[in-house]
Image 1 (spheres, rainbow, N blue to C red):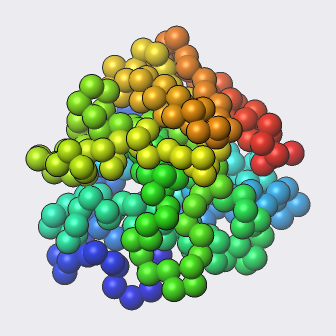
Image 2: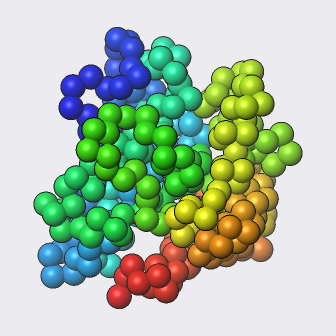
Length: 278
C-alpha cells in the first residue's frame, strides 16, 4: 500500500496472526502491515464504480472474509470494482499515534484507487467506502475527516470518498450511545473529551459529507441503532443525500437474519438510485 516505511509506524516486529472461527470468519489479529486487495469485475461488466471495504471487529480484530472478500466478489458480479482494506489495528507497540493509524490506511486506500483509476478502469468520481461495525466507524471517519490529510499527499489528491455504505456502524464515541470497546481500542483507556468529540462522527457532518446509506437492526445489542439514527439525522440536517433501513430483528453482524441477499440488496437498490449501478 505504501511506498517505503509505513507512516506513523514503529520498528516493532510484524506479529499478525489468523485464527479460524466457525461462527463468523477467519479472524486477523495484530495487523500492523496494511494491505489493499483488488477484486476486478469482468471487463464486459465493469461500470466504473469502486468500493473500498473496511471489515469490522471492534478495532481489535478484522473479519476479512465475511465482511471483506465475500462482499468484494459479490460486487464484482454487479460490475463494481472492489477493494478489501486490511487496515492496521490500533496499538501503542506498532504505532506512534494509535488513534490515527486506521484512518491513515483508509486515506491511503482512497488515494491509491484514485491514482490508479485509469489502470483499473474506474471513474475517479465514483469511489466509495463501505464499513461494517468498527469498520463503519473507520469509513464514516474517512467521510468526515478527509480535509485533514494524515498521509503524504503532495499532489493534493482528493481523499474524500464519493459515497458511503455503513453496515451496523459504530458512529459515536459518546458515553450515551457510543461503542466503548471500539473507543477504548482506538483512543486508549482515558481519551480526552476533545478526542471523543472528534471521533464521534455524527458531530463532524457538514454539507459536503458524502451521500450515505446506512443499514442497522433495531435489535442490535452490541452497537445501538442510535448510532445510525444520529448519523442519519446529522446528514439530513445538512442536506446530504442519504438513505436508511432499519430491521426489526437481527443481531449485530446479521449472522442469522436478515440474510446477506436481503440487506445487501438494500445497498444495491440505493446504489442504483444514485446512478452507481445500472
